[in-house]
Structure formats: structure tokens, C-alpha cells
Image (cartoon, rainbow, N blue to C red):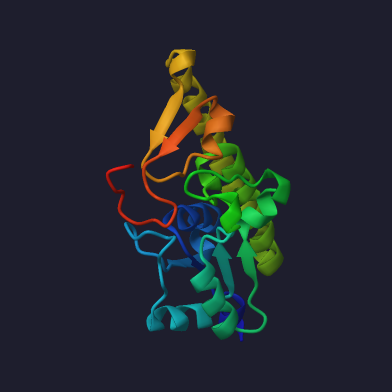
Length: 211
């Protein structure tokens, strides 16, 4: 019973940016398993049977949300323990009226651009949401989570300012982006850039001659 009290939280995440944020906040008191391998397109990722076993053992499942991981969410809801919460960060960090739609994520298809983590202000919101959830699940380590969050937020503030400084070096009429995958929808308005096109088609296939 005593060992159960001090057992590390097992957190299952999806894409690597979310996995990294959770590891920064959780530190030594959590075990984090990311199920979307690095280099795999998260929009087309389909979980495999071994992922079901991982999801079954989770104390909390943390995903980006905004429809990024629908197959994984569907599986998680089917196999997870009843008491295991699923935390959709983007859905908590941003009001629906602030969701972005664009070249790769047209409004008529109904799925918003989910790449909030390129906007560092929104990463700070993610960090606070994760911190509060971990404290709720594991209050005995509250001070640890608070300390980790403070350290991480200080790093994020430096990164946020560094991006502003970098963009300032670009002439204002040249602050336009053509991207491969349209992941800068939340980055661009914060840092004064304009996304003028995305090369990858909205169905995430290989680009053709038109692109």
C-alpha cells in the first residue's frame, strides 16, 4: 500500500511536442510515454494494438486536441480505465471562436488547425493546464510541479522574446511565409508574420505539380 502511494503517475501522450511539455512539468515524479513516433505524420497516425495496452495503463492521457489525434482518442475512450481523464490541451487553451482554419485545414471540412504549440504564449497556457491537472491527481508533489512549471515558463518567455527579436530582423514587407505543412496558423499572428501558402494538400498527400 505504501509503495502504491508513492508510485509515479503514468502519463500517456501523443505527439512529441506535447510529450516534451509534459516531461518538463512532471519531472521525476511521472513516467511519460509518447505513442506517436517522431517523424510520423500525426494527422494520419493510426494507433497499433500495443498502443491500446499502453493506454490501458495510463493514469492520465494528455493530447493536443482540436481533432489532431481522433483515432487515438477513439481508442483511448474505448480501452482506458474508467477513472483515467483525457486532457485535450488545445480545447482548454483556446476558445472555439479563436480556432484557425486555412489552406491545410479548410473550415468546410470542420477540423481546425491544431498547431497551437508554435505560439509560445499558447505553450505557456498548456504548461499551466498540465500543472493544474498533475496537482489535482498528485497533490503530494504539488511543490515539485509548481517549481518545474516556474522554471519552464521562464525558458518559454526567453524563447518567445527570441522569436520576436528574430522576426524584427526581417524587413516588414518580407515577413511572409510559404510553408510545406500548414503549421504556422497560430505562430504567424503572434510574431507578425503572414502565411501566404502551404505546399502540402489538405488531405496530407504528397504535393503535386500545382503545389
